[in-house]
Length: 52
Image 1 (cartoon, rainbow, N blue to C red):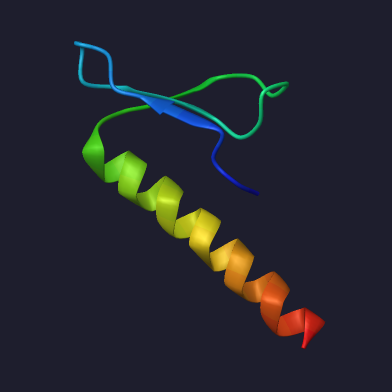
Image 2: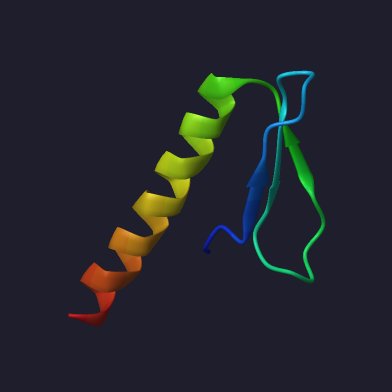
């Protein structure tokens, strides 16, 4: 899972999208964005360790 787009509109909630064809998700504030990014990093690292 990678991040295709992240936009911070004026209302303070993040709009994120995994890929161009995926639906847009609404994340409630900066803490949710950090959690989202941490989840992406965890999945990438887990997949790399399985490949090795």
